[in-house]
Length: 606
Ligand code: SF4
Image (cartoon, rainbow, N blue to C red; front, side, top):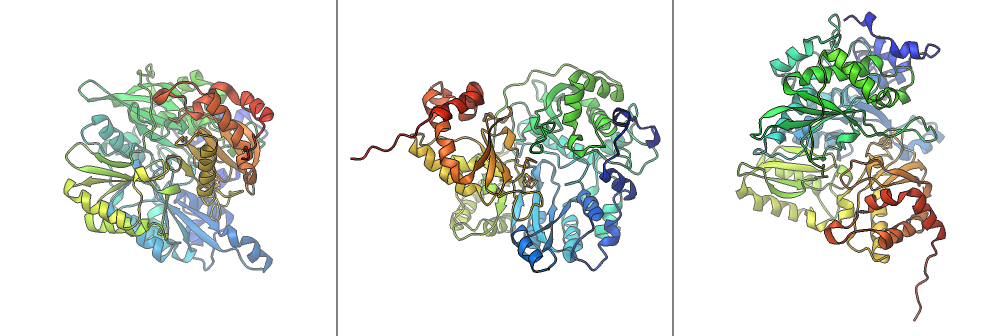
C-alpha cells in the first residue's frame, strides 16, 4: 500500500475541517528528524513549539519550573526551561546497568530524583537542553531507550511485573510484551542520528520473527515505500497504549489500554493464542462532554500464529480511520465508541484477512501489586518495594534512592517497574535475602506491612511543578490528603478500612483516576473533581460525584460518604462490600441525597 492510497474515512466524514497542526509537523519532520536535529545544535535553553512536538516522539517533554514561572515572568526573565526524559521499558524491565546509569544521570544532570511512571518506565526530571544529548546518549548506551515513550505512536508495552519462571503464561506475557514493543518500534534512524551521531545501539537487536512480521503485508497493513512500514509519514493520530497480561492478573490495568492481549495457554501450559481487548483510554477535557474515559471492549481471540498480524491490523485501522482533525477525538476509544464493536471488528478482519474468533472464557481479574518477598519459581526470590507516588529519592525519614543504588551495585539485580509506580527486584538468591533486608532497614525503607494500605493502593501523577498541563497539585498533595482520609476513617469508625485512591493534576488521567474507588481530578488550584465507584480490581469506570471539591472541604464532603458506606454496606468479613463496589451499587444520586440530608453529629460533651 502506498500512503497516497490511505483510506480517507476521516477526511470524508469531516470535509470542512483541517487536519490538526501536529499532522503537518509530522509530515515536515522527515521521519522525526526536524526541527529537533537543527535545534539541538542551537545555543538556546528551549526548543520551538514545533521542535517540542517532535521531541516528544524521542521520549522527552520540554517543561519549565511552574513554581518560579510567575516570578520569573514578572522579573522579565526567561522561563526556567528543563526537560523530562521518559524511558521505554517493555514489561517494566530495567537491567542493573541501566538503573545505575539513570541514578547517576539524575544526580549529575537531573533533579536528584527518579520517578516510576504508571506505565512501568522511569522519568528523569530537570535536565537542561545543553545536557539533553549527553543524557539521552548515556541511556541508550546503557541498554535503555526513550524512543516512543511519548508522542503519537505505540508507547511502552506493559506486562505483569511478577518474574515467575514456573508459570508459563507469565513467561509468555513478558516475551510478547517485548516482541510487540519491537514490532511497533519506529524504524526511523533519526533517533540514533540525533542522540548517538548515527551509532546504532546494541539494544535495537530484535528477533528475526518480529522483523519478518513487520514487513509482512496483510491487506494494506504496511506501506511498502516508506521508512516506517507500519506507521508511514504521519505515525498514529495520537498515542497508542498496549499491554499483555495473563488471565486473572490485572496488574496492568488492562481495560485502560488501546489494546490489551491476554495470554491463553492449554492445560499443559503451551501457548495457544490471545484474547484481545481494544478501545480503552483515560484522558478527557473538563467541560467537553464529548471527551470521556472508556474501558476497552473484548473484541475476540486470535491464535498465536496470527498475533503479530492482528496487532498490525488493529494499529492500521486506528492509523487509517482515527481522527486526524481533532486531537481530542483521536484515540482509538472514540473510533470504538463511534463505530461500535461490530464495525470495528469487521474492519480489523478486513485488514487481517481472517475472522477473529470468540474470546475464550477468562477467570475474574484481580488487582495484584506483588509487594513484599515472594518465590519466583526457580529457587530464587523476588521483592516488591512500595514507592510512594513512584518518587525515588532520599529524605530524612527514608533513604530509598541510596538503598536502591547500593542493592543494585552490590547484588547486581535486575528490576521490573510496576503499573502502580512500585518496583520489583528479582533473581535474588535466598542467601542474599537477609543482607538486602538489612540494607533496606538501615535506610528506613518501610516493608509492605509497615505501610498504610491507603498509601499502598494510592497513586498520583507528577503534576506541579514539572508538568505543563497541571492545573493543581497532585504528587505533592496526595500524602497529606491520604493522612486526612485516614484520620476521617478513624473518626467515623472505619479503622483499618482502605480503598484505591488516585489523583491527577488535570483531566488527562495519567494516574488513571477514573478507575479508582476514589478519584481526584484537578479542576483549579487546590480543587478537584471527585470520582467514585471504580472497583478494587480496576475493571469498572468510576462516576463523577462532586464537580469541585476545594481541598479545604475534604472532610466535610467525604464524611457523609464514608458514614453512608459504614451504615449501608453489605456482607461481612472477607465478603464485605468494598467502598468502590458500594458506591457503584447505590449510585451517585443516592450518595448525593444522603450527603444533602446529612448533619454532623456534634461530639457529646461530658
Ligand atoms: Fe500532567 Fe495531567 Fe498527566 Fe498529571 S494527569 S502528569 S497534570 S498531564
